[in-house]
Amino acid sequence: MLRGIAEFAMQGRWQAGVATALLSAAAMMLPPLNYLASGVIALTTLRMGPREGAKVVTATLVVFLLIAGFLLGEMWVAGLILLSSWVPVFVATLTLGYTRSLAASLLAASGLGVLAVLLMHLLVPDLVSWWQGLIEPFMTQLSQQPGWQLDSTQTEQLNSSLAVMMTGLIAAGISFNAVIGLLIGRAWQAQLYNPGAFGSEFRALRLGRSVAVFTALLIGLSLSPLAESLRWLVDCLPVMLVVFGLQGLSIVHAIVHNGKKSKGWLVAMYILLVVMLPQMLMMLATLGVLDQWFNFRKRSAVE
Image (cartoon, rainbow, N blue to C red; front, top):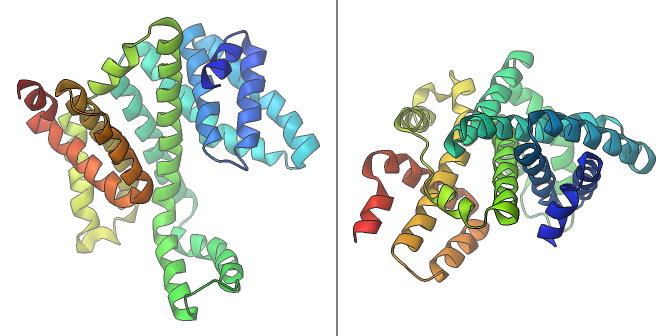
């Protein structure tokens, strides 16, 4: 089925636009489908070039506006998805196309996330209060449900905690969508035209020491008393954890491949990612940061 989506999208820009728009619309009920939509944009841009990729994004917008207008009645949704999904993955894909570097394209995606953090802090002076105002009605409605187990004080504390994290989480979500869409598109390209190329490329991913130092400093800052006064910097941390989490994921894949270990290790890791996402993301990101100095892939190959 997934290969069928890729083959259909490669038949032309309008086929790609229809596929992306339909997947984006379906993602409102099943969010992971949005990654496939971004993957179509990445595939067509990588294979057909930047100009045709831009035309695919335009075609997608036209088709989605029709869907949003006739089925959803909310035209503004198209603009939101354009800015948060389609444009970021297009920019990340352009970076991969021009640099031929998967690491550079991932860093471009993280740069878009950091830019989103800075823009939000510039446009909204008190982001925490703003998020609290947006979340509070939802939390009030949720707390009235029969199965809700938190009292009013605990609900208020949860609301406050979410408000502090929301800026970083939204920015990380933008970067994550761009990165996953790019990886899906690159995997589709390899599957259709150069089987096996994506696996070796992904296992060799390294983001660089300077970015690793920046991420380590953000982790230290988030644990320090300066975190509140430098909130705009701390909000960049989830973005960097996303890309270094993928770096850690590539290391695990490389260790299993180089050491000819059982694929069961990978299955167990992905199960843990679903069950314990925050903890596993932090562990994988830490592994990715440390790899810039310890080169765990080389060690596994020697062994």
